Length: 636
Image (cartoon, rainbow, N blue to C red; front, side, top):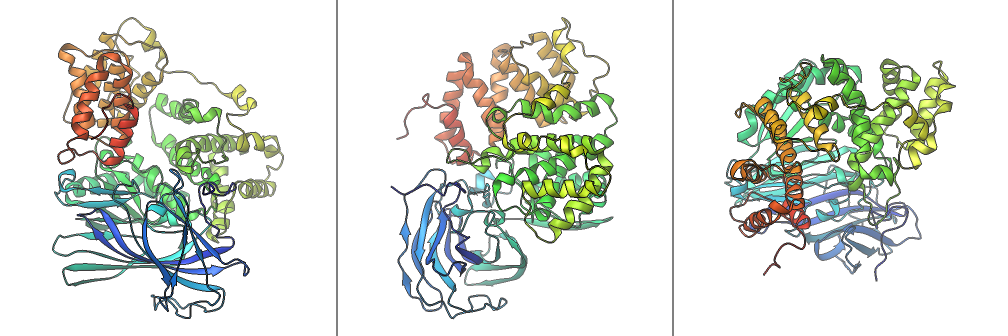
């Protein structure tokens, strides 16, 4: 039986402290017919401990055909561990006694050749069924062309190429990608597009990134009929990548958020280009952004300002990802929490409505209180085989934001805390130094010990905030969480109070989210109709999120209306916008109601068994299958 990953890093088998990959060169061909990437990974390896002769890599589902020394072609015989559903398979390569004397495939990088450096070539191909790579067929895209999008999900880069899949292994990176010619396909990957060459029915793209080391989970690939638009406006430059269908909508959305983005960039001294790639509506939203590019769902491009401003949060996360370097995902809150915190601070200043501004102050607290992880997971989590980094992304984002708000109040408000970020934290990060939770605490105390607040931070219960689930008891005593809309739930009539801004998408979405989260509350048919008549009256401009929340409210309150209209609307919605974010909650609600359970099961089986016409991707189908587990016939 192959052992699980090491206890200190349970999400990775690798040993970069002993033998580390320092440079990765990928040469891959994209095969849309077979849904595979095929080629080779050429890894430059350095022994940090001279007595250690084993290079250990993470893989997941990779079909590895050969491992060899790059310069001589000498065949190496690796050992493959058993497959684990969460962590994949360990690949162990015993290194020969003499290092490679070849500087490697890249003439642009001079390699020091010595006995403790090797260049290993691994020939392999990916498997078509794994969720790190989304392969979209012609009928699943708006332009009728194939599309490939990767999502490493923090620890799934190992399903794209063999690597040491941990943030502590930071590498230089380059790639050579070939795609079929005559299809109008373009390629996005990290680094600078060095060249494009067409020959023998293929187009070859070369990317080079050597100036800044990146972790494996920060490597991505997108292949499709992409359009690129470069625009400069004020103090910002942005690159937009999208298929033709969303080009104008994407340009409009980015122009709408530019004032807010410019203010954040200036206030927090960010100096980065904005790179945005628009995802089709059937591709799951990315819970973690890449430092080089921000992936946003096309579902965010419609609606009023407060809907598309979610894109700002994603862009901030990319900027923070470039600024803050962590070496262990247990410190992930430093990226996710800071991103959410910085995003919500200027929003509090921009929103005019008093009730929304006040609601945002408790929004993060309410979000955390509704998460089951609060009772079992700490802000600095202890990972296990069943608790992986991907499982805690949203939790550490919200709890980290609450903690930073708490610290901000402690030291005297937004301006003083922003001063710490700009003058105390960023200088440390810009030297590419690793940031840990302990280092963050030290930097904060050091900064305010010289800026007039040394004693205030001594009252913070650091250990409880960082290492225990839930909030410290002292923080609960200071919280006042109250519903601004509870009176409407309790009143007999369905009329809305005048202070609810019915033209503000943000207010409506938060109101409906609040109603949906209330336990043991039954809304009458009259109130559900009132919500529909008030907020969904204009079908042309109705924001998708509002309709989604209203449909869930109807199902939760066991109201289908005449001829089961609500069921049909919910099923059609899940079919049209079939990413897990929308489809899974709707099907979970339908399954929990005995009246709709069988109808949902029959509809899903039709979708599952008609892959040539369904827009749903395998990841969405698998998640829906889990929800309906035990209710489906066995596959043939």
